Length: 342
Image 1 (tube, rainbow, N blue to C red):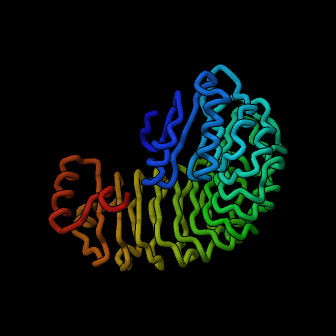
Image 2: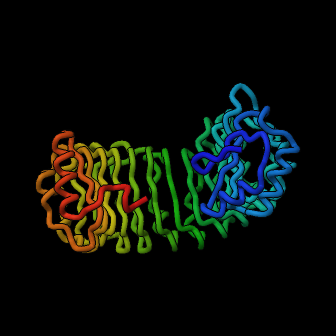
Image 3: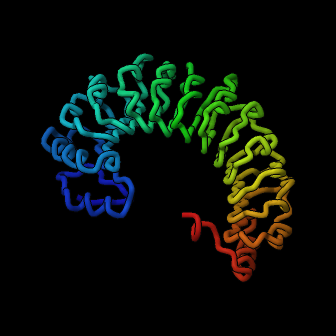
């Protein structure tokens, strides 16, 4: 049984000692199967004993199954699983077996050819702490039942949106990821999530999201949102500490005025020209700016960073400039990205 990158792929046998050793040095380990020929009731039952022992630290994943349908009846032999992923699958049979998994706490579901808008109603919703719903062809899940997820801490939704506003009252929800969210749907409801700490916006499209404000938000990540021209005033996020803006070619300015950032990323925002308020970031620990066209990179290289700053990673379109900047920044005592934030 080979463990690579926190994963065990298609094991021919289960070695409890190796899994226990792996989980002693990491918070989670994934055991995954890509086709029916790689598993049977016997090996799944062995895996179930480890699920009983390690709880949601051991993730069991079924994926791939190219050219065939995943038969969820195998889950009858996995009653103690707490962390289950069924994704990158074209179709599924006997999906109601998921409803019998009474220890399930973390669940990721992505079946492309799936047409059961009421499927979420069958899950042990009140026990879930993490739920990821990956896009399918229909994008027709009714998310109103998520209001029953009173223990939910992490929610990721790709492409689904019907009645998502009802998650606003979830008391434990602190991390939300929205991917492929329709431009016509506002996200103001997220401001009503009482303990929201992290928001990740990926794909989809919108000009801005000025309607969203949060007193509790600490981490904001925005990546490849089509048409996005501005982040607006960051003052509406008084606790924001980490900001990441990636692949946003239409953004020309990120106004940091009023923010108190510890971490700032701007990558592949090629038309970024202005960073008002950068000189006021007295608590900055890490800054990464890569591949802009309009910013004065020499000015940033020579910038008088605050005493808190430990990582400065600057990259232009010139390898010669990048190599020189890296050496000069290293001489000033700054680390490059990856040596501190890992």
